Image (cartoon, rainbow, N blue to C red; front, side, top):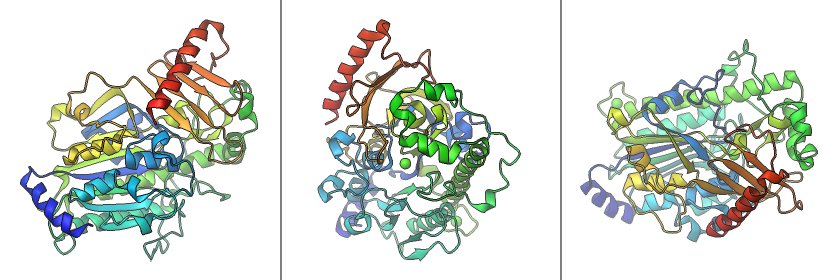
Length: 468
Ligand SMILES: [Ca+2]
Ligand SMILES: [Ca+2]
């Protein structure tokens, strides 16, 4: 939206070989296995599955912090919480920090910029950020049926449909010379509200009634760890914590579990339907029924989430902790320009939410700010992964989710998961995920693992320092 810079850089971009457009589809609290392409046997996500078939699926994708605002700051800026410093829901980003975000850098590079949906960082999104040509973000958590965005009322629409409408509108604008006068490449981030719960509502998972008939005949299977024994075997701090009270209210009876998980699945299906509309709009941006104006062949699509979500594992709900259900993300990068040999891949590199902004800048041919800590995924998508890729990462959580949420920090390596709880004395968790992928047996007090525990405790301290 910086007009002079846009004209200057757009002309220099035009001299390059057509920098691609980017559409970043960013769900809220969508766990790794909540899609067809990641093996969910109930939920229907045909459009996400198509992206997976045409792109690269990262099977070891994680968040550096499992809570909304911290992860969102990380996804904008490519930094750990230790560096970007966003630890609370009401904390605003400074203009100087935003200047090193991927959207502001792409704006500087001349891109036509769009944002739709939950900003999730403080309350100055519309005031501070002139980055966007098309700014349809909102503060706080939003409302499934009563959201107003940039003065426009949902007017009866479910918010996922509302956002889909806005995304189609943006894509139309992006090819309209009256709106994008320099025909600059575009970048759109759609930050879906779904499948995040409606905070404080008696009905937390408010799907579009259009999908009420879905999954009615299904019986949702319980996770292997969704048992009383696993709950009682968990750390004592979890037996009276926020995760337990939320589990009781959302999933505490079989009826609640079935009803609410089906609604959760319908919320994700509802986003999938809108993704289908977005893919169609890329084929026919001006919506005249002809595809001569298609931009699909030059549009990178990235699909991910800010963090995962417990659906009853250990009788817990929420996120916040270094369990797989909480930290593991869906992550797909689809580059339509690649040859067929590089499509439909599944890769195992350990990748992170903080890698997303570097990836977007890399595709755009823009410089990656040195303050970013994530790395571009493009070379992995292209089929030539770096040999020095990470094999461990640091996760920390600031305890900003209210009482009964426990500050934690630790590491996930390729073989182990380690967590310490700095405000809870000597409470620790250690799991060998190679033999215990569901993290059922805490080895922290097992003397046979004492040296491994010391090693990972030291690694946590080291990586925490490096994250600053
Ligand atoms: Ca979230
Ligand atoms: Ca058309």
